[in-house]
Image 1 (cartoon, rainbow, N blue to C red):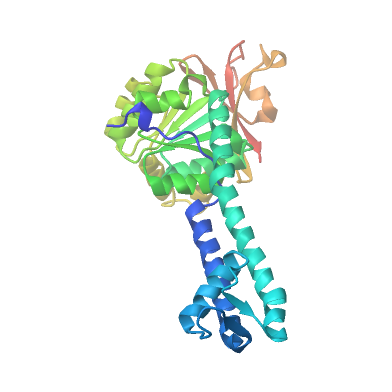
Image 2: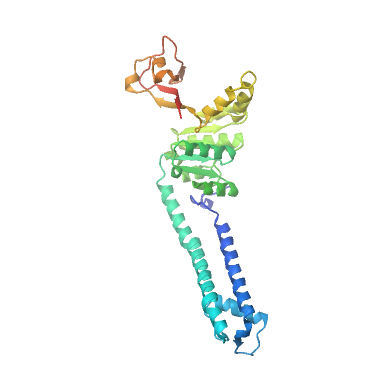
Amino acid sequence: MTRRRDLQPLQRRTFRPWHGLAIRGAIASLLFVIAFMLLWFDRAGLRDNVDNHLSIIDVIYFTMITVSTVGYGDIIPVTERARFIDAFLITPIRIFVWLIFLGTAAEFLFKRSWEKWRMRRIQQTLHDHIVLAGFGRSGQKALEELLADGTEIGSVVVIDDDPETIELAKESGVATIRGDATRDEVQKAVHIERAQSLIVSCGRDDTSVLAVLTARHLAPNLRIAVAIRNSDNEDLARQAGANIVVNPVSFTGLLLASTRHSEHLAEYLTDLATSEGRVRLREREATKDEIGRLLRDVCDGRALRLYRGQKILCPDATGPRIEKGDTIVELVRS
């Protein structure tokens, strides 16, 4: 069971921090190896003030001390070439290693703390945002279409309980929260009551329906769209409170069936369904100038449907006439 105190704050990151740490560690190790090889090659120019004998352990010790600090004086360069190597080769390596250490500290201490504080501020000010519950293939495609349609990336929040999926969402640049989208505390953490819409694609129909039910309980007026894979669960999703139910399996079957008698129909439907297609559907409210006119006479004849409450009206020679509050679906160029 997920408890509220276990919830991670909203996060947004464009890279994986441990991956960057590994790269920095590899570079620092390589620099230490280079410094050791230089000092070992010129070990004759070094003098051990303790026992006047330099072993490989002594050179490793001198390398670590010299690169990380300025040395203790127990081993010193005595020849001009050894001092030249220390001044113009070892010293730049020392500076570069310290820059790596300081940069890593700044990244994992200061920057991450700043990022967490900033994400908390974003969480407190979330308003009219879009919540993606589930970031599988459908969720990733939904995000792609939202961004292609002009949605600002800062207005999208992803919920998922899989750590690898959350990392993938972070790399996309969106704000994320790791948790179960069916839990009240998780949806409250993203201020679902202030969201513009919720898109649910949790992978399992039962999980998706429960996430819809939770969201409808917390936000009675929220617009909710859900992906349902089993047609038997579509009515259940609507009863749970979903405004829009999408069945990707049924849509795929529709595209496949359309190829039986037509070569281009499936291509046109796919073009119509994506924001990057040459044509697309647009839904809008009827304007004042259109009230009283026939539906077939508006939008240059590209009006396809009129929604009046629960009624769906299509254009014909005698109607319908547009009234105040009607919603028009029209075909437009991308």
